Image (cartoon, rainbow, N blue to C red):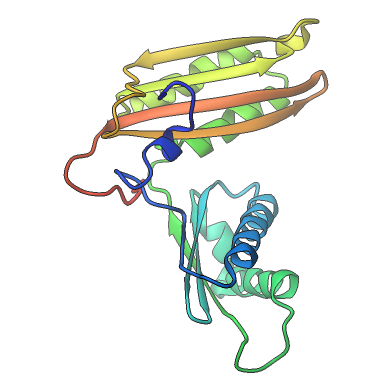
Length: 223
């Protein structure tokens, strides 16, 4: 089972929790759609700013959006102008309801990712950038795995699949360093998958990072 499902989904409600935190009986589908679209919009708009994950919390008419980034200064901007502009963009694109008591209040919180080399999403983004610059895939994934190990991870696996180096037939290649206990529920494994758009077609990049075991408490996804 652990080999065939997303490691984060496999560990939900055991050591991990959901990125979206709210409860609704009547507006579940509406809120779910909003969350998905907001996350996709922010990841696309801030694609060059090292976005690890986006968390959303709702309480009444208040929405808190937590953006975890390795480059928080670029998002915040001078004097906080970047956050204000980003908040206005979110309100304009997703909350066009009329002024009044039903207006949703948006709070943006920018949080720093202290060690980008232990974030599967950021490592995958780095590999994608190397592949799109036409770096040989073996060098790209091997260098990324070495950086992850030096950062203190207990294990890492990076897999790429597609027309590697422009080959006629698509195939899958991977590099593994250390341990990766995918069936152990207490194992803190960060996972991400990202497509790389190359001139030969799309190459899929998957990254697993094993950071150790978690006992007797839920992981807060600390970086």
